[in-house]
Image 1 (tube, one colour):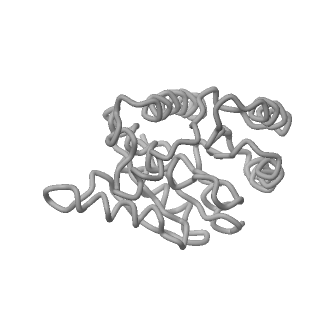
Image 2 (image 1 turned 60 degrees about the vertical axis):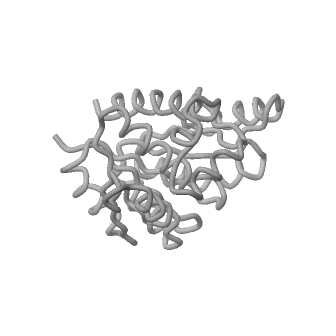
Length: 216
C-alpha cells in the first residue's frame, strides 16, 4: 500500500511552510515512520536545511530521502516517493498556482499554515480555492501565534467559516523554531523538553489522526 502525502500549501509568503515541513518530518520519523521530503519551492529552503543537517551526521547523510520537482511533475514525483515511504511531505512555493495545484492534487492531506492576522486570512483564500477545486482534505494550522492574543481567537473563528478544518494544536511565535532550522535541526533536537517541542509533537499527533481519516 502506498504511503500518505502531506502537501503544505499557502500562497502567502513567510507563513512558515518550510519550518512546518521540517518539524513534521522529524516528529513523524521519530514515530517509526519512513518519511520522505519533496521540495517544489525554487528557493530551495528545505534542501538547504537538509544540507546543514547532513553535516551533523557521521556519514554525511540525512535520514530523509529528498527530491525536488517543479510544475506538473510535483504530483508524479510525490506519488513515486510514496511507493517507498510511509509519509511524503511536500513543501510548495508561495505565489505559484501551477506548482501548488499539482502538489495539492496528489495530496492525502493539505496543511495550511497561517499567521493569525487579517492580512494572512485574506491571502489564504486563493489557497483554499485551489484545495476546493481539487477536492482535497485540508487542515489549517495557526502558526507564530502570540501569547494571550484575542485576535487569534477571532481569526480562528473567521477561518472556520471559510471551510477548512482548523487544528486544535498551535505553534507559538518562538525564536527557537528559526534558530534550530538555521543549524539543520528542529526544536525537537535543540530543546526536546521545551514548550515549542511539546507544541510540535501535539500537532504531529493531530496531523497523523487527520491523515488516517483522509486515507480511509
